[in-house]
Image (cartoon, rainbow, N blue to C red; front, side, top):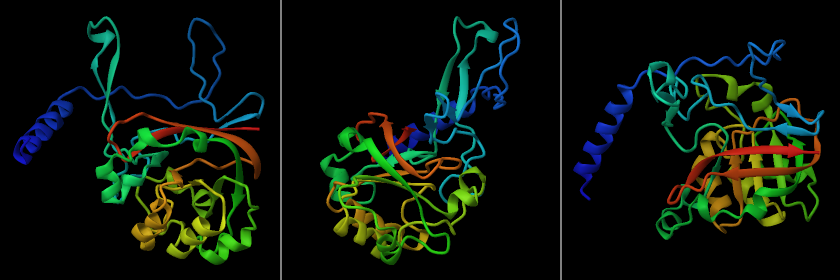
Length: 267
């Protein structure tokens, strides 16, 4: 299939999507309905009397997108609408990137040989993505360096760690414009984690586990052994530090190096 054909196909799809009426606005009000004749949806972050925390960000047009000043932008359209005579409502979704919002990276994200070999999100180990996890607070005055990792004193045997950083305090995932000053792992921090801990699931509270200036080399440290899974863009505000069961499920996107993911913590 020629590159010219793919370019023309992509252009045609983009034009077709642009011609579809915009998706209707959706209220994010969390008010509980007081009357059955006019129900109001309930949107929650915590379930089961404080036992279950949803740590995935809600997708909105104004959430940040990598490198963009304009945010994620429109991602839902309603080509079939009951208001316009269709038998059902059928939405169309188109994201700028599979690395949008709360998402997971596969090794092929930054290692070409792994991408070519087929190490996509469909090959990620669900045993790693589900199980006991430790939520820790990272010192707020630094990226996650080797020194910071050592200072956290994470015990051997801990396989899943969610790192809450200054990104949560600054509410960077709620800001439309991408901010390259976010906190993440430096190359030596990623290397220290890979070589000195048993951690296989790394969760963090912005779009990249690696800080901006170390974006590629730090990712390579994580991906080299194909054992560490990165879950990025987590929503960790108002969740107490401690041990939980984490459950993260990516879409089975054959051939994709990333996927949106729904993650919850259960006490």
